[in-house]
Amino acid sequence: MRQPLIAGNWKMNGTKASVERLLAGVVGGAGSIQHSEMAVCPPFPFLQMAEQALAGSRVRLGAQNCATETLGAFTGEVAAAMLADFGCRYVIIGHSERRALYGEDEAIIAKKLVAAVAVGLTPILCVGETLEERERGDMEAVIAAQIDGIIALCGIAAFGAWELAYEPVWAIGTGKTATPAQAQEVHAFIRARLAAQDAVVAQKIRILYGGSMKGSNAPELLSQPDIDGGLIGGAALNADEFLAIARAGDAAANT
Ligand code: PEP
Image (cartoon, rainbow, N blue to C red; front, side, top):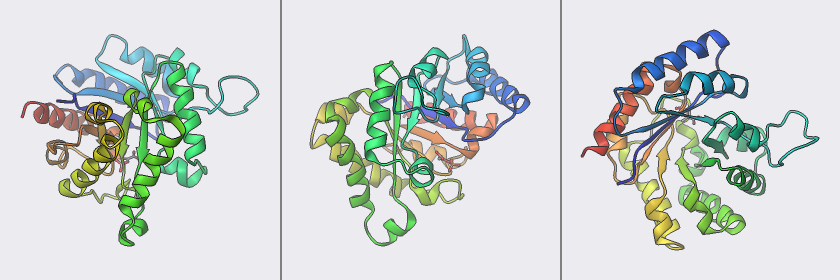
């Protein structure tokens, strides 16, 4: 049984005041969560505040991106080592918004994965298809290409130190969720793809679902055999919703 991981991707949201309230809400409720591992990924300027607020709690800290390079003249970039210095355990890499809006391709994503692991961070590597790709019947081909591209650049063994997130692009921030059966089908496909190269890595790796997950749909999604947690956008900005998803992870872990 893989321990559920419930990770909040706060994206580019928050003010000092709202982040302080959100952190207090998550930390305040975290004591009631028994099995789920929880993590929050705030925007960079709030990492120090989050590091302090999460200290001594069971909620882990993550970031939403990191640089491909390690140090030096890269204006505007944030190095993986800086994230580790601020107490991050996780870093989201290859989110569909970064692929679509900032031109991140497999080569860039692979460099970021290597940079993150080199300083002890655990990447959460995101994959997923667009609505157009799904409707064309290309869903499996797109996801296979995303996975195979990274295997070719980093090797299958590297996946043993990462988390994966399946995020259908058409379900992100749209209120449209993949049905539990649709999500399970893709998660099983991803695991089988990895297992064809390394069965041990495939059994060990956590594959999170992301795309309009919330307290009400989390129980059914998280009870699927190959869904090992959630990467949560909008609902992670509300402490009660986020905690409700973590509770659904607890319930799934108990079944
Ligand atoms: C995300 O962007 O990672 C995400 C899953 O967003 P939302 O939950 O808002 O769909």
